[in-house]
Image 1 (tube, helix red, strand yellow):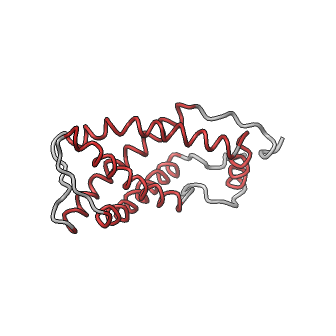
Image 2 (cartoon, one colour):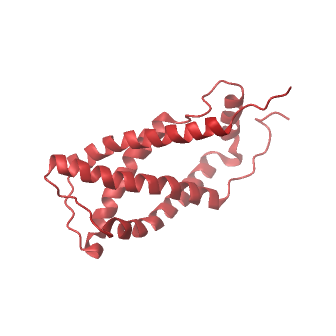
Length: 175
């Protein structure tokens, strides 16, 4: 039975949630740091989270990440019922026609930037609860988003290196 006709077990809801929480958490903290740097450069510190404020915002942000995971899973299942496109991509990787480790360069860039925008929105929305003074303009968020792309690509490369060292995705030796 070839990979294109083989049935794929659907990914668990928990898989979607855990992966989204992992990457969403990484991007939240890198975005918060980048927003602080961009704010210091462009608008004399309109965004300076201190103490427990980022953690409070993060705990308010986690339910948003869970919703994102569930929506992404629903959209993926709607666009690729039975995971046929995913199976075809996996087959192409096994045959050496696609990259094994650094899977989605464009996706990494988009995610890094969009999570910065989402993080900025989270800090702005949480300001009444945290009591923080948050001033972020479009230019500050855009610069932070571009800076966060480097963090996202670095994290993706780190994951790729872990896969490379651990042997994930490597063809088994048939000696």
